[in-house]
Length: 188
Length: 284
Ligand SMILES: Cc1cc2nc3c(=O)[nH]c(=O)nc-3n(C[C@H](O)[C@H](O)[C@H](O)COP(=O)(O)OP(=O)(O)OC[C@H]3O[C@@H](n4cnc5c(N)ncnc54)[C@H](O)[C@@H]3O)c2cc1C
Ligand code: FES
Ligand code: FES
Image (tube, rainbow over all chains, first blue to last red; front, side, top):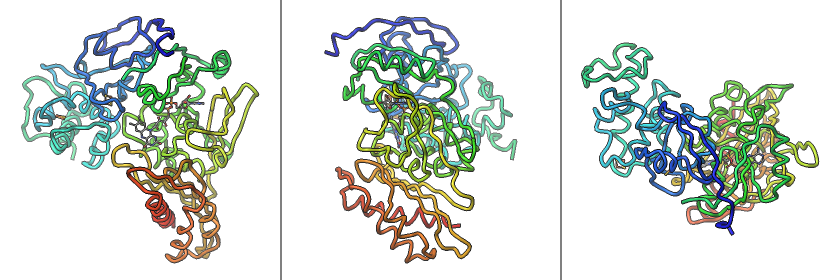
């Protein structure tokens, strides 16, 4: 019966990484499939069928959501940020820089989702304790790292963002004193 | 996995939502989608139509009116756990909302969806019972206001009329001097409550218990009020023996569930232990 149902397409307009797209989609299309299959943004991964792994995490209107548990039509009119849009190779987001510096990944499959979740975690707790970092990352599963270096990476990013005096988006510029010991000292 | 096909409509008012539900008996409301979409992806649910209520603006937010805190059905778990009014007047609700799922789930899931869905392992039913919440909404027959006590009838079954929209949840601000807490044993994989106990506790000038309301979730096929434990605690002094004795009755009002992770006996034990802990934590 399900297969006989209407699969009439409906238009959806989303702003993804600052660029506006209007596409016709089936209502049952998941946001993660819109991003990966329609828009070709394959940095957002799919790791499970049960809304648990968080590999698909993106920011919708600035908040971390599991894009496998949201319909593309629900995102109509929203602004979406994926791993492709949070930073660039020349201008890494502080969390990306943290993963680089602290070796926060091994196979890298979970990493895009973890970075997006961490970005929201730092929005809610700009100066998190290790406990808060671990709790904030409950919605992402990493099968490689044992999380230790992920926590270090997020702590690094928090310190980096604090010392940038709130200028979050510009904190990581290419060639900037990477790994040098200044982080964290500025405000304490 | 991919859900079965359905038609989709976004509504902007409660009346539009009611009309869409009335026009299509196979339609379902979708709020945050964090209970419904996982079921649809597993094809355990296959509604023919979804009516998206997220854009109904007056169902969002927290307001304080006449000794009550009224929370719009579409307010998310993240908004609730961070809200200063909830944190100061309904601390057990803030505590429970902050422990739901994970950061991403709390950004999408709503209080209305949580209560309307009535998952036996959801956290918020216990809190709604302990705070004596009233669930208000509109159905084709008009307005309704249902007390939490009696709202949860069974797994995924509530007293809400057919074709209704839950619009807001009104929580009585508990009497001055009471304390409220939420105590949870999360399932290690799913994060849902194996057992969750919400307690609102007050003591008189002699330290004896003069206000006790306890809601329990997770343990059975439906959340319940631990009436026997409440009665056993009333009037007692705040001694360890009195608390232990009262908590010993906390599993009596529920039918304990059983699964691979926790047997019925173990669940009953957890309910008793965590009821005692909740009461101790709520002592001044
Ligand atoms: C990975 C994961 C972990 C989770 N962990 C927990 C947890 O630890 N504790 C917990 O309590 N919950 C947990 N949840 C569930 C989460 O809290 C859900 O968000 C919530 O139960 C449902 O809210 P929703 O807005 O997402 O509802 P939806 O999924 O949109 O809807 C659920 C049901 O309620 C109906 N409905 C929704 N809104 C209304 C309304 N206003 N009026 C009438 N009917 C309505 C819908 O038709 C549907 O049948 C988890 C979910 C996930 C995906
Ligand atoms: S793919 Fe696993 S949570 Fe989305
Ligand atoms: S780095 Fe391999 S799963 Fe996280």
